[in-house]
Amino acid sequence: MNLSASHPLPVASRRAAEPRTSSARAVGVPKRVVAATVAGNALEFYDFVTYAFFAVYIGKTFFPASTPLGSLLLSVAVFGVGFFARPVGGVLIGAFADRAGRRPAMLLTIALITIGTLGLALTPSYASIGLAAPIIVVLCRLVQGLALGGEVGPSSAFLIESAPAAKRGLYASWQLASQGAAGLVAGAFGLVLTSSLSPADMLAWGWRVPFMVGLLLVPLAVYLRHNMPETLRAGPTQAVSSGVTGLKRKRGLIGLAVLVVIGGTVSTYVGNFMTTYAITTLNMSPVLAMGATVVGGLCTLVFSLLGGWLCDRFGRKPTMFWPRVAAAMLTVPAFMLLVANPTATTLFAVSGFLAALTAVSGAASLVAITELLPRGIRATGMSIAYAVGVSLFGGTTQLVITWLIGVTGNPAAPAWYVAGASVITALAMLAMPESRDHALED
Picture 1: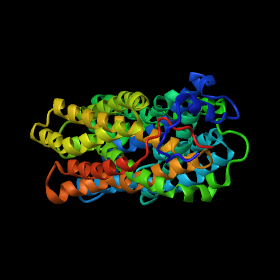
Picture 2 (picture 1 turned 180 degrees about the horizontal axis):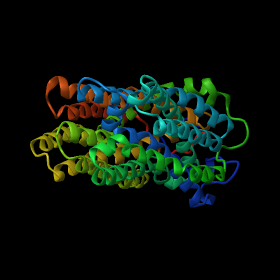
Picture 3 (picture 1 turned 120 degrees about the vertical axis):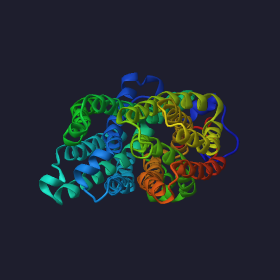
Picture 4 (picture 1 turned 90 degrees about the vertical axis):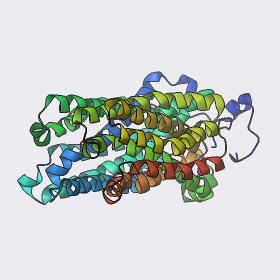
């Protein structure tokens, strides 16, 4: 079926047209199966974003420099290194998921993220082993990036394929909601640690604790995913809808999807940077700074699910478009307010506001992109679109805004970056077809 057709199928026809999977169809999939996807996804993102929340301490541990800003720049640059492996992971693991199944691909990503996180948690400091320390950290970030690049496509495809036709948005919104849960838990750990440990202890060992806790949860995630059913339907796919041919056929949609991902990516990683921003630019205490992370994670969790529900009710395009327009218009005034009044209230309000808009729009965007792709390239296409967009802008956002603040002396510089990216994304969203009432393409 051509998903760009302008006339949607009636609901009854849509349900009849959707192919049955090799295991269980949407209505027969138990909630624990969705929980397995969400738990594994949350764990992987938790391990990845924890680095951002502790960038100040990691920079001092592994990247000594003549100035604190230089150390921080090196740290966020290595944070960005992990993103450059994402497209590779997206292509390789996404293709594996479209050929061998969603479940084995998601088990593979869990294994890779575990290797990367273990290396980060156990690597001695630069003072202990010299140049080997930052080299190991860079390699670990590359492995983590490879895992995250291959996680989003298979897990999004699984959630879409598991969902009842009328609830695809709500089911798939758990992909982004789980990322919010990851940020919430990582931020909560940071809040507890910074309020209970001295700065010297935080630098010496405290920042490693969240990574070690994440490793303790790996066996549970592996167990849950090992017992998941497979949603990739058995049998041959149409030649024009799989492999390189399928990707070429949908290259226009995938390119548009990359632009759609950009706005949410920049907003998300500016939000993740709020902890470091509050400490280094607004001169706020580490405890208050970590509080912003908790607020951002909580808002992402809640508003992602709201976005999924809204896009099931009102459609994908309006749900993803209008919050992005609001972000383009209101982020600069919000940051100006924060800079003028750097209090806990304004910090939490701005962090929550930005996270809420991003979550509603982002949830609908991930749903639309995934369900517009045919089964034979659903995981690969989603992985490529997400990984390329996030690699180009997520991996560089923290470095760019740190540099912009240093060069311009304007502490509100991150807001202009968010606004510019939001304009580009809003225009791309207008060009996306509405997919709520379309059947999933075989």
